[in-house]
Image 1 (tube, one colour):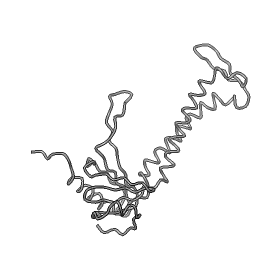
Image 2 (tube, rainbow, N blue to C red):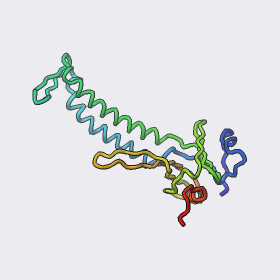
Image 3 (cartoon, rainbow, N blue to C red):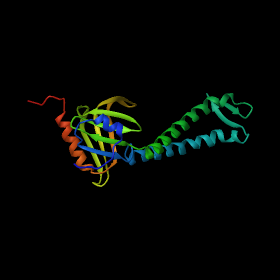
Image 4 (cartoon, helix red, strand yellow):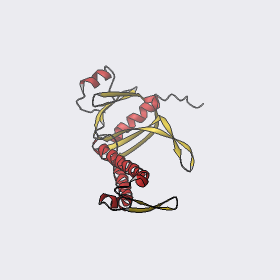
Length: 208
C-alpha cells in the first residue's frame, strides 16, 4: 500500500532500513464512541450526585441547618456545627470527584491525538509527542475490529496482554489490552495488513 506522509525524524531513525507496510497519522487516541461514553456517563453521574449535594449540603451553603438521622438518632448540623455532617459530606464529595474524573477523561480523550503509526513486517511502531512505542506483531492476539469508511475509520487491535478485573456478582474476568488507531485513512487495507502480519508472527504452534 502506497501512503505519502511526512514522518518525524526520530520515528524514521527508529524504523531505520525496515520496510514500511503502512504509515498513518491517527486523528484521535481512541474512537469517538468511547470518549462520548465517558462524557455522557460522567455527566449523568454528576447530575445524579448533584441531587444529594443540593438536598444534603445545599442548606449549609446559605447558612441554614440540615436535619438528618444517623444511627436512628436525629441530628442537626449547621454552619457552626459541622462535625456530624463531615463524613457524609466527604462521601458525597468522593462521588462528585468520580464524576468529574470520568467527564474530564472523556473530554480529554475527545481531543487527544493518536500520533503516528508505522507497520513493518515485524512490528507496529507508534510515535506520539516524542515518545516511541514499538510492539512486535506476536504480541497481538488477532482480535481485530474495524469501523468507519475507507476514507477514514478506526481499527482496534486486541493484545495478548491484559489484566484481571473483579466483578461484584461473579468471578474475576480477564480483560485484554487494546490498541487503537482512530481516524485513519485506508482503514480496510491496513486491517488486512495487520491481520497478515499477526498471523505471520503468531508464536502459537500450529495445530497438527
